[in-house]
Amino acid sequence: MNRRALMGAAATAPVALATPALAQSLPEVRWRCQSAFPRVFDILYGTLERISARVAQLTDGKFRIQTFPAGEVVGALQIVDALQQGSLECGHTASYYYIGKDTAFAPFTAYPFGLNTRQLTSWFRLGGGNDLANEHFADYNIVARTAGDTGAQMGGWFRNEITSLEQLRGLKFRIPGIPGQLFTRLGAVPTLIAPADIYPSLERGVIDAVEFVGPHDDERANYVRVARFYYAPGFWEPGARLHFMMNQRAWAALPDSYKAAIDVACAEADTEMVARYDAANPPALRRLIAAGAQLRFWPRPIMEAAWRANEEVTADLMQQNPKLRKIMESYLRFRTEQFQWFRVAENSFDNFAFSAAQTVR
Image 1 (cartoon, helix red, strand yellow):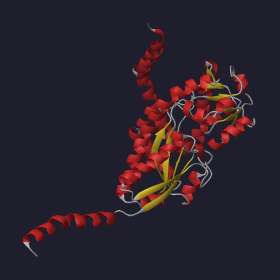
Image 2 (image 1 turned 180 degrees about the horizontal axis):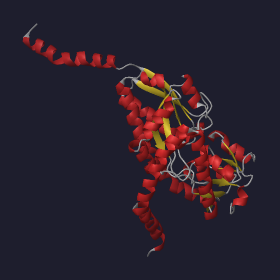
Image 3 (image 1 turned 30 degrees about the vertical axis):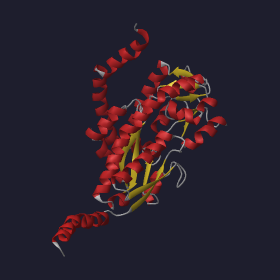
Image 4 (image 1 turned 120 degrees about the horizontal axis):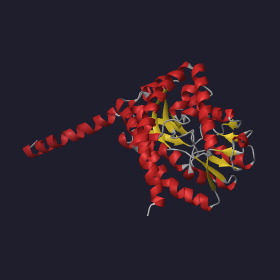
């Protein structure tokens, strides 16, 4: 071999050898992942699609997560069961859908009069919330990462205007989790219905009212066609965190770099989802009002009664469930600090600036 050929071979050898070695070090992994939400809810379901795409990008396409909307593999409210059994590798859902199994699932999504989106993020990351969540989910053979938040939600769609507590008595209200117990104390009849089944239930009169998320999703669901009165705020969901849940064995089998890819994709989803809602909700609300929605705000006496009922429900549940008590003691300590701080800077700014934009000239 002449000198020029030898030098050329030496120059190309590292590339020729390194590429196959790198490829061989990355296993092909295929997971199936179901959302709790139908495809029509593009931000909710779309967040799972974006997590999947980001994981594939970060792993050079070696780790692919096939996504399914609610009901295509298991029932919309059966994701935790499927993960426990290993019939799914992962799912994207709200943990409070599963308080029938354990009330300790509730605070990891939302809690009435609790932490808003920013405060909840801080509790999860710096206040011990993630450690408590990991401890809880491990009991169900699950590893989970926070993966998206809706921001503060609306208070729901009602066939009739609600002006007093008396009008809540006997009201058939689609509302999940601990808020359902709160409304039971106010005289309503709560029920949990999967998102895909809400509209037909409202249309047929199976329920009298429904809360879901906010203007963007509510417009896509067409609730305005069958219930005109649109209430604010959703005081039981000042922020609603979703989780990307994984079967523990499937997670343990992943290479560290693939685990890191999931961590990155879910962390990005935490901020991306609420940003999308903040951009989409204002124009959607205007369109809903143009379509006939009657915007209303909860009367203060109802809000005060709800606060008192929530204090009673929380005390009872903490007494009944030691796991929930441990979680809520952390959550409520953090809430006290956050409420005091937000009153100083955040709320004083909001209370002036939001109204001044309409009134000061």
